[in-house]
Length: 498
Image 1: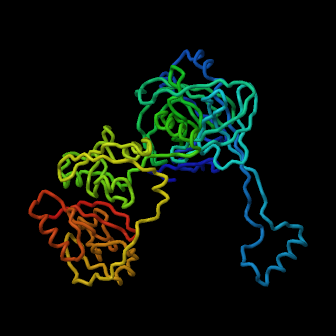
Image 2 (image 1 turned 90 degrees about the vertical axis):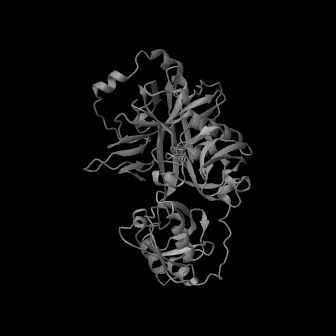
Image 3 (image 1 turned 180 degrees about the vertical axis):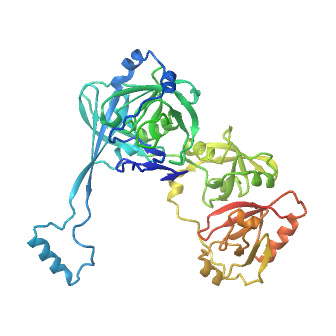
């Protein structure tokens, strides 16, 4: 996965070491050792006198070995069955002693984990266990216990395992990651590069990091040395509480350069509870499609400053629809918590129990409006089919209209075929965009469909021209267009009318 020139490497794909040594965001699975000297400044920042803390928690931290049986591709050429070549290839393989059938091989990954229940509940990263056939949990006393997967969640990269032990296991407990401040001391324990249990220390370098690894990114950043193989291991506060699960690093080589990321305990604890109880996640669901609010959109909606999450669309079968939420609303508070930017909202909604009634504060037409929504279940929403499409054969071809550096025409069947527009999409199609125009600078292009202008639905090119002429009465405000692509995915685009 590319992210601003960085790359993500996963369990079964080692990070390539290129000549230009691009920085890499790496999941912390075991890999060949690469040693680099620590800087004096980093050494000075690390907490000291941690021996008692290590004695307190070390026995609850485990190594995890996950093995998956995978099949290599067929040796035989990939040809349709029943061809005249079948017998020829069978005879060739037989004469040369080759078995053309798929061959199984075993792929292994190493990671870390920790025990949270004396009965044998172990926590690690989802990417450590993946689709493994066999999982071994290795304790500090050398015991190796087979583990079964109780549940796992790729969205926050956590897995809950269960081992059977003839005696109670040493455990650690979660702390409150929300109380951690930048500069607080932390300690990481894990299995870097398969070396065995290793302790490192540092501080919380930053909070609320988004590295584009999932929909709920909210990482703690630390300079405690964590490497491949630390995945799934705990990040402790100085009271011996787990305030994060070590998950990823930023590195040019796969080794630590003092930039590591841990999923906060506040994010993973509710998920772990659900996986333990239901063996699956049960996240809250609002049923809206959102987009970020930039300065131009904030100006067009009288928000003052860019904030909140702009509703670009409402699921017809989701909880938001009967609650009265609408496209164009900007959600600024959810269940009493401020929504500073759009990425805050999915995390807040997902953390809520299914069926809970929550108050949602939106900005609509420059005023605050409060709605009460009964949350649905996200997993049910994801299984729903796309919104029912409707044929609209009644649309007639209008004369081409020009505005804002674009040309529009009616959404005829011929236009739908030319631009591959689904039948359920309604509005006016953009047939051309002038290079260098404000519309072009904002990403509009031929094939886009304008559904609304300043919250007014448009069906014919003339409707767009009239709506834009009306917008020109307030020269300071741009025209707010609701734009759909051919698949029906919508977004708001603010275009100056000057």
